[in-house]
Length: 468
Image 1 (cartoon, one colour):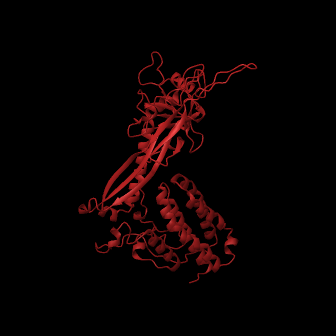
Image 2 (cartoon, helix red, strand yellow):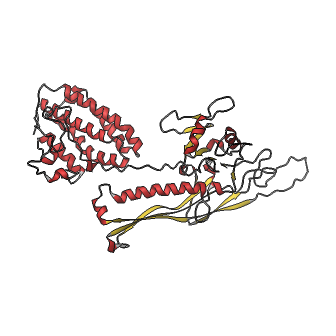
Image 3 (cartoon, one colour):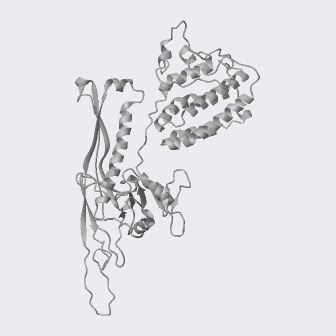
């Protein structure tokens, strides 16, 4: 069926209005939900311009529509990896679609083109309701089926009762050029689980070690005492002609990483797996990955080294800063921070970690000149800074007043090896008689500071990469 130019303009104006509605629905959704909606929308809208150009050659150029801009924005949305990146692209897509809808609408003749009639409101009669009205999916088998029904309604005027129940507008807003019309997406097809995502600020900063076997031996130079040698015992001398010099040797040691298992297990009934709109197996995987990240962060800081990582707070290389004379309990002073900074090895790679309860004190702390030492982030996605280095709130830091409430660490001096990355498995046999399925996630890894002790410089106070 080929529409007149006026009908086509009205039709495509409403198609883009529908696209606007779907894009607006993506705001604040997770990356997974955005991708699901995007995958449903894109195939339908990719054919819009092709069909319009076939029906009305040259009209797109006349309207000044840049189809490439929409295509580029859609490609960027599809390529974005996380929710934050996708959310930044949605406003661009919304702007493009609004401009295109305005272009189509500006060319329409006055008056309605195709009357949809009164589509809004309930479809009950005499207290009897259609069964689909109580269905959150409105009788649609999938999101793709819903969007295809919307496209058929716009292109052929065929509107089923289940789609009619989702129509927006009223008697006064019921034609194709209605700027307030469009179909509402059934809530069952917006499966977004609200979560507080775990943010691992340490994992990407440690030194990765290849582990081809469960146990790896790493040779290291014993060079933490610089009083006579900075190279683990080697010495050099000035000499006169024919004068003999003393030989020297370099001392080495082995750092051992032994991978241990980290595992999580959960059960789910077959009923919830069948009925859940979220895809429970994927949610369990996502949740366990966050839990793995949280556990690893805790071990990097506080691990005992027995069957788990050795954390920096239990390492012989840690320097605990002494409190000031007369310093009140449960407090942090400017002098504390300066002493940590002065004795930090590799400060240019170090980051601050703090318990959230310390933030008020840190943000209001000033140096002797009365200048704030805390710098708020100047750009989105960039961390705040303390004495020039990134500062992050960390749940694994201890409460204010306890050692570890504030940590300064150069994590490039921390070794972390993964022998077996996170894997998952499921079984229906463990609780077969209970009609339940088991989900197991596991990994094998190891981690430890490679420093065994603090560094003793030739002159001055001891230094380390880890301070509390």
